[in-house]
Image (cartoon, rainbow, N blue to C red):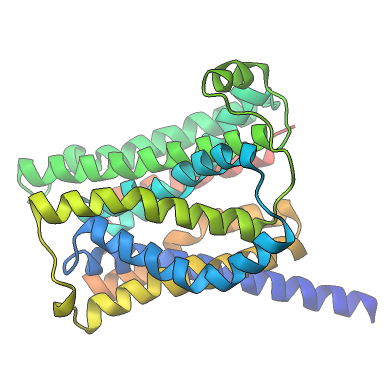
Length: 327
């Protein structure tokens, strides 16, 4: 009986992780469609505004339980900029590249985290793991440069913009990697290399422990404040946006990104993560494109090219090789 209960709990945990992965996999084509109606930073601002309104009661309860120490505010702001505000690079990137390219490039994030962990925290990598990192890097470069390597019927301008879009997505991966590495530092892990760098920024250890809900919720408010001036500049000097002209499609996009992608997926992922082994959850990092491909085809008529298929295979082989051979 206990084994059956354990197995049922494990299956529910996997179901929650698959739900989160499916929601995030569908986010990229949703972003691309919505950006046809709403400017990038306005879209981001409206998303974070709605999330912050919905999260406010939860944040009040969390802050009553664990008030944020003044000394920790700087750490949380930096983490908010790296973890949430940096999503602007994905939104800008998806505007110019395909949602499929963005999804495939997203699978390279774990390899960056592995490499950074090796460099900053001396996490052991054997020869096979290093080979996996190298292979995944080749696959990432193939996807990023695919528009120039396989030109097809696109103009040089379209090729260049798509490469820039791919580069923007990769910049977010770098920011996310920095978020993970800096989080480890402020949570107490030691890294002599990182300590020297972060001392210049006056980033110290957290003085107290905060729940994942409070931590993540705070980053949403950081993003709301940091995106606000970019939204104003966008509407003043680029493309003015009239909120009263919103139709059902952009409204649905905002609701999807605010409620499903930011809240439901996060809750499902955290719930599943607590009830499944960390090693078992790694595979879900690579499943995103499996959900993005059919959704992109239905909504955007995007279909993966042979080069895209080759790239994702190379990246997955490299990442799995690196993950399974870490000491």
